[in-house]
Amino acid sequence: MPSEFEIIARYFTRGTSHTVLGVGDDGALIAPTPGQELVISTDLLVEGTHFLADADPEALGWKTLAVNISDLAAMGAQPRWALLAAVLPAPTSDWIEAFARGFFACADSHDIDLIGGDTTRGPRAFCVTILGEVPTGKALRRDGAQVGDSIWVSGKPGRAALGLAHLQGRTRLTEPALTECLAALHRPQPRVKLGLALRGIANAAIDVSDGLLADLGHILEQSGRAARLQIPNLPVAGLERDCLLAGGDDYELLFTATPGSDSGITALAGKLKLPLTRIGEIVAGPPGELVLCDDGGSVITPATRGYDHFRQ
Ligand code: ADP
Ligand code: MG
Image (cartoon, rainbow, N blue to C red; front, side, top):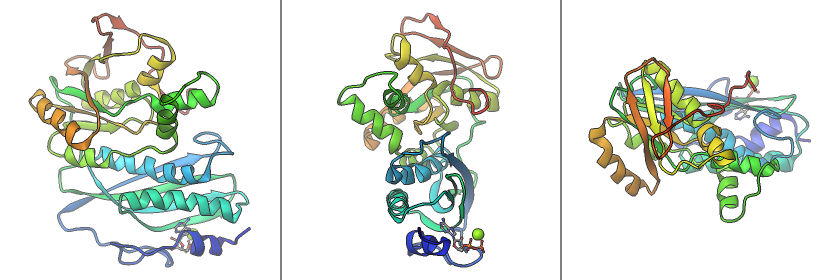
């Protein structure tokens, strides 16, 4: 088993591309770009809650960073720097090497420098703090939705939850859905390019980590608005519908924008080769109220809105 300092030196120390002083001192030094605000976010991944003890370490390394990048994407920010606090039981070199490979593959795909962290022994858990930049005043926030806005979602939400249901034996997926859903669960692709493109277009945005309805609920509460949803091709019922509406772990972006932007957003979907689906509109009403209709316009009451760590 490698020592703490071997772990840091061998697996988590690399060259940086835009950092004054990275791993190795008591603190890192960064020089933010003039005219930009720093966006900072942190997320925990805990064994037994976010991943299983036998999780593939390379996929886990990827996901540990990807879920943090997703928060910055939802702010319309360019991710730039990350810190990694790792709690490890008695790791083998192979395990850490694979975890670091996945982590840095994700870092490289978004040009992020790992600039520090902490390493300690204990029940396995990871905490990433991520920093990014956004031009002053241009960040996408949860509190800007306006009455009349179209509500949009990227990608195909529900796939990660379906993949998990398959692994837990609650459903049986077949190819090609199986590969797609497991990739969504294990290797989420944070929508950074979409977030950047939505600066100046979206009035509100959030990433879907707890479930479509739950995360839309956060926008509605913080914006003091209500919503009417009519999701095209909503699965008739059952697990597929539950996963789409309330499945967590997708890391797609949910956003609102004035209907004048509808055609521009459709064009953006083509440019990014990423489905963007209009699923409803913001309406006047009690803050947080959400009316969901099927394709025919009849009101549906979903079983749950999504995931809450202290409620399930
Ligand atoms: P200190 O005792 O001053 O907190 P550490 O020995 O914990 O310093 O860390 C030494 C250096 O290694 C610091 O620059 C710290 O940011 C970095 N570091 C520690 N753990 C990690 C990690 N898992 N990933 C990246 N950098 C790390
Ligand atoms: Mg330390």
